[in-house]
Each structure stands twice: as structure tokens, then as C-alpha cells.
Image (cartoon, rainbow, N blue to C red; front, side, top):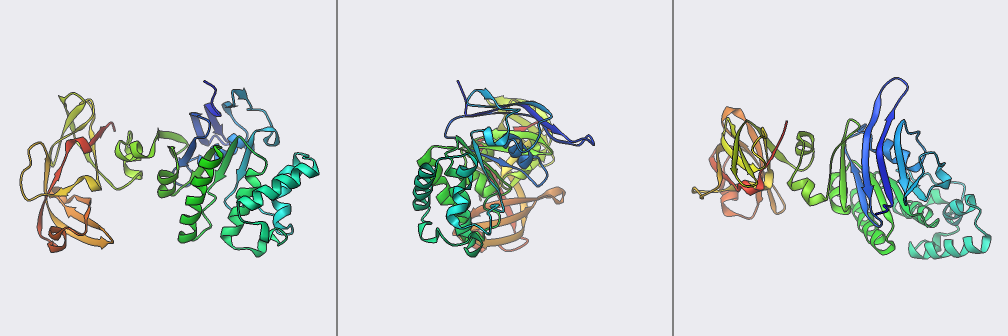
Length: 355
């Protein structure tokens, strides 16, 4: 099968020996939306620049549509890139900015004007076509950057934190527009972000990176529910990680570990030593439910935010865990700080991983 994009052991090491990206492997299908997610300095933007051809690759290969483009210059690759600061030319009009990529590629004037008119109409920018780009709002400049990136009809659109400069409300609007646009055009998107909500809400798959290493590649739901490494368990969502001693398999597909808080059963092979419990997997329970894992503690903190109650529960050993429950439940509203609280967890919600 030919993929739109394939990275084979791609790496970047700087002259001083610093490893920015280590042996990155990835296959992206046509029309897929893939997000690179991780903290600052993890290597996600460096990887994007290597895909674009703006960053030299130390080792490995980049393939696009089955062709090796490792040594192909950026302007010859079937890609277009959108930067966080949009990189618009302030002295140019909106039309001139959008047409820039076509001019670089030497498109005939008639073809250029036709494509520019069509993309301006698509992004509702035609009425601003003759204005200078720096005279428009952040949301309008974002649309100009997207229009300029798409007007050259790339096979792959590369986006380097393109929504980072927008306020929260506008960011949500553009997120929705971006996903709808990607589905409509069927173009492969590679999207770099440090915002979990963007990665989990927009993409088909998420690549989580840390210190230049790929930690996990999964669909958003699997990434959230089944982390595979301690970093992902700590970085994604709001999980509690219990450390313990492997106690073997409990049943097919389940394992057990002994912790200071008792025996914890979860999805695993039985040789893992960490148990990951999502905050929303805990439930307040007044009685012992067969098969559930139980924790006894006291309420240390309660915050009600909309429909969600964010609790901190202090267990023995002075360990605090995060719990998310429905804020509308009467038992949640009746809780007082310091009150005893019993929590139950379905073992199917627990993931066992290796240290």
C-alpha cells in the first residue's frame, strides 16, 4: 500500500550532539488528519520541518506517495506549510498573499487568478481581497494563511501550531472550520500542537512525543483510555498512576499488581508494575460492588465546574488522587471537606503498563 507520507527511522542530531528527534517511524494514509502532540522542545516542530524540507535530516528517509523526497527541496515537495505566525506579507494585499505560492510555482496568470478567486470565495475573503493583510483581524489572517496554503493544491498540508495566536473563542471556531474543511477537501493534514484538546478533538490519530522520542501513536480515544507508557499516562488527561509489584494474570486480558493501597486489577498481561486509572473512572460508592476495586479516603478538595465535579481525595500514605464525577449528583454536593469517601473502579477502566 502506498501512503501519502511515510517516515522511516527519521532523526535529527545537531552538531553539538543534541538529539532533537530519534528514529521516527510513521505511515499516514491519504486524507488522514494526524496531530503531533507534546511539550515544548519535544521535537514535534522539528519533525514537521523535516517533512517540509526546511530542516536537514541526519538519518532516515521521507517518502511521499511512495517517492523518496529526503533530498528534494521544499518547493518541489507536494506539501504546503502554515506557520503559527502565519508568515503573511504585510505590504501585500490579501489577494497577493494568497497568490504568492502560485507565483513561486510559475502558474499562468489565468490559472492563478481562477484558483485565487475560488479559494477567496471558499474562505469568505473576497470582500477583503484588496486590503493589506496586516489590517485584518487574527481570525481573518488565519483564513488567509489557510487559503494560501491550500490554493497550491498540496497533497499534504503541514500546520505548525496555526491556532496558537488566537483567543479561546476564536480558536474553537477555527478548529471546527478546520476539521470540516479537511473532510471536505480530503487532503492529508499533519498538525503540530501543544494543546491536548486540539489534538484529541481534531485528529484521526495522535503522535505523542517526549524528548525527541515517539511515545505512542493511537486514535484519540485509545490514547486517552489506554496509555502505553508512563509519560503518556501522566501527560494525557487526568490519570492516577499507582506503582506496585506484579502479581500475575487474573484472567484473560487482565493482570494484577499489589500496591500500598491494595490489589489493583486492570487490562494487561500480568507482568506490568504500574496501574493507570483515569479520573472519570472513579465513582463514589456507598457499598461494596462485586468485582470493583475499592479505595477509602477523605475529601481534600472540591470544585464544581459546570456539569463536572473535580475532587481531590486523600488516601492513606498521604496520597492524593484526582476524581471527576457528575456535579449534579446529590452525594457530590453533600460532601464536606475532610469527610470520608469510598471510591469504586471497574477493572476494565484500569490500564496496566510497564515502568
